[in-house]
Image (tube, protein in one colour):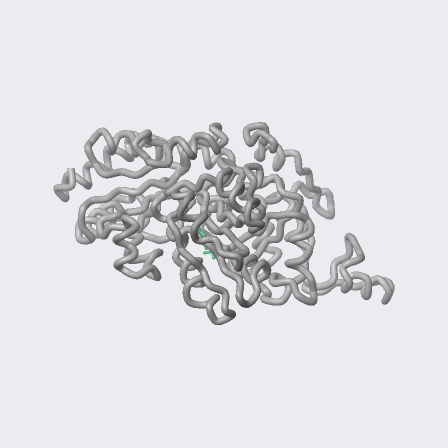
Length: 403
Ligand SMILES: *Cc1c(COP(=O)(O)O)cnc(C)c1O
């Protein structure tokens, strides 16, 4: 296996040079849903998947979506990638592509609420069952694998509890039992390259850090050329047939934002690390993978590209839902960020995951996982002077008796 630290994804992206149709510095957006052919024979070959470089119909592929896909394949170090209209469009397509009736999935239980709901409530309609496990306990993961298991699923850094998956160890398990290891890397772009650690397929919600401006939803699937071709197959490809197609205008704007991802990730990490360290010193219950007190600190340290730090996500437990709500309202009032779901924005975003993004997970399961009522999830923004932000935040906490 290639040493994951030899892999420099930001350089790979930087080395992609595109010109627009008239010499523009950005590639031209193709404003078409369908494409002409000079010969009928080429159209037939394109349908059969045998006409490299020819476009057929934009649900299959389009020039701008291929550019963005190429840049995201460079980000993850995979042969290819296919962009989708949302992160959920990527996740559902991958699972439908890899599983058939009677198959099983072993998944981390601390995953994005929508993914959890899809596995728990929708996949059983096609007789695909999911066993949810504590992904940090490898013996529990292995015990859940049956002869029907096809997919091992996790998030690199999980939502919202920031548990870290040991991808190298999970990849070994996947190999041993001939499973596909599918990793949602939404929280840690550039920081962790799951395929370099042995994963088979990497998914992102582009909606978050990668796009970074909270103006669109989007997703991507990164994998082998064969898998990406399979997803686009006109006869049985999930992306082609379920139709989660990104619009070319959107992929153009996401590609431009991707060009600054390396700068943004460093600043998100810098700011979150600063706040987490200060809050911990203040005696607050803060969870941040960059803190030595975090149970997964060593696992992440081993797997990550240190240039980008420990990420922009942090949680704070202020003891009760009432206090969490009051603090979030006061912070928004003081322009410290927005009381909103999602993450990766230039402004800080905060929400109470128990009542918002993870509301699909039943109360008793949330408690077992440590998803307490007073938990606030922060996506720390790109604030220029984070000490000033810290002073303002702790001022809000003092006003509410939290500090
Ligand atoms: C937001 C999110 C998703 C879903 O992505 P959408 O773009 O909203 O469809 C999936 N996984 C994680 C970890 C997320 O944060």
